[in-house]
View: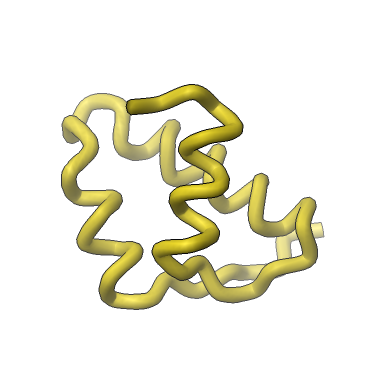
Length: 57
């Protein structure tokens, strides 16, 4: 089940605020969160929901 998700420009910009060495893992977690929620586009709102769920500040 590797349905692909897309990122809005704003959400991608937020992802770039995460330190580069943890960014791939964070991206993967956020994409899995979105897929589990049935979301195909990651917006800032979805990004923030995932961030809250995983306790990142």
